[in-house]
Image 1 (cartoon, rainbow, N blue to C red):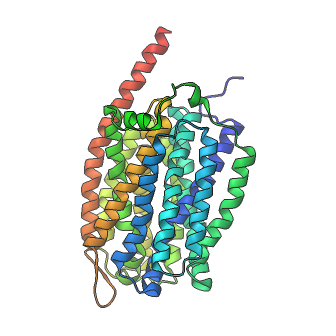
Image 2: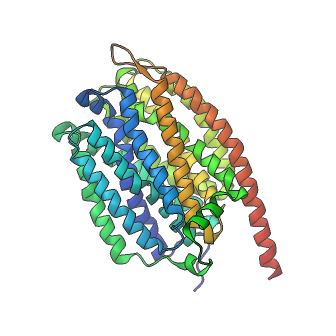
Image 3: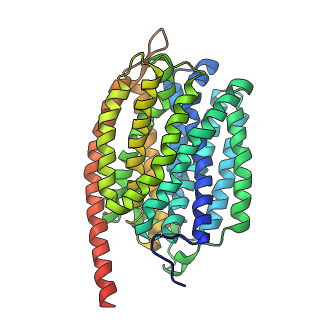
Length: 416
């Protein structure tokens, strides 16, 4: 029986759920670092710049791993790739959960990044393999709900456990969630190997270089690098900024993330549907305009009432969703099926490396006064706005390529 347009099969629904759960654990591992920032800086007696290196360690190792994995990404069943890298991610997260000092934590974040960074690209390749482009906005909307759930449930629970049992506990909690997800993937996910039948066998290095140097892919890689800039510039220091500059009590801080997360739970699927209905590029531009308005306001806050912080932070996160969901859906349509795994690995690497550079840059710009307040956070905001502009220009070229590709495929289908 032919599948109805806009309707997911039971197995497609299962894939959306399991990919979202996996994405939840990976995002939570990364996201929990930001609210733990104020606590880690205090307990380990490190500077904001040193904390920035903890974030960058994950990003740089993830970027390097993605490049190394790109040549092999289309040579194996995606399910096997998923299980291999998820196992390594669980190991790295466990090492974070037993880290005795700053340097061990730095090493553990590198291990986690080596595996976690590749997982996102494998996830996106699976989505692109199993769902047509016209449905990917909705799929990305559901997958991005993992981001919201991590804030509604994961981050507050993690912060509660960190306050009660120490900062190691959130990482051990993530390990406890990861293991059953891995078992479900092993037991019930079907092999995803159709791409192996659609491409000639190539040497990994040849496949990597051929994919990385294709002109039509370069614009997408550059856009992805700029997409991650805002998050890595501002987010690692957001909890410290809210506590010391905005006056949010550290005990109340989880409420800020919970409220933003609830907004994301509703906004994610809605933005995904709108992306498929009105066009992914239009949705991306709308989100970029909102973000351009909100970032300077948020990054310039001084002592502010909690209710106002909640509104501004929620609007900012809505802008983030409105950019990330349509852009990821759009970029997923760039590669040919035979290059999809390599493209996604390189794209993930570019995202992580760009984010790592942004995090280091943020560490150079940001400073701390004697009272613990962050200085120059507003400058990070304006640098982020500049990145929004250049990213929009690049996404315009990506959208143009997708439209031309879709039109060509339509002509071929009619001729056939």
